[in-house]
Image (cartoon, rainbow, N blue to C red; front, side):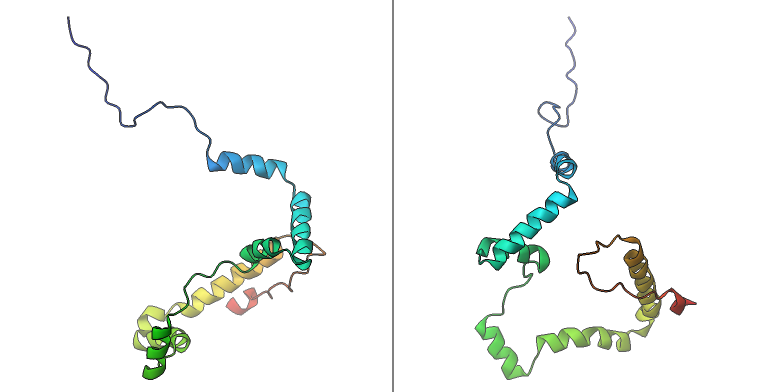
Length: 147
């Protein structure tokens, strides 16, 4: 009798389809209309105005976002004060210093900025704006500045 060769398997377990986040997101998007979502947001806004801290936190998370960095330690602040360092000024000065030191790396900066402006303008024109949304005025069209 010949021994039956075992087929090599690379993934252990059965190959049963499992639900993924995209499956659930698809159902959510099919079920909750924009009007339903608008009602939810308006309810949260009203609750936040009435003093509901959880509603405020939820709205703030989406409107402002969570802080990315941690506050500096007191020791770090004292050392910066003694050394005369200012992290905000340093961060703002860095791109200017880099352009001066390495001009060849920044030859296309103006071109890239103008392309970004054109794309932002096109997005502002193409994205539908709800009449009562209170959105700011759209970005002015800068396509003429490229010619």
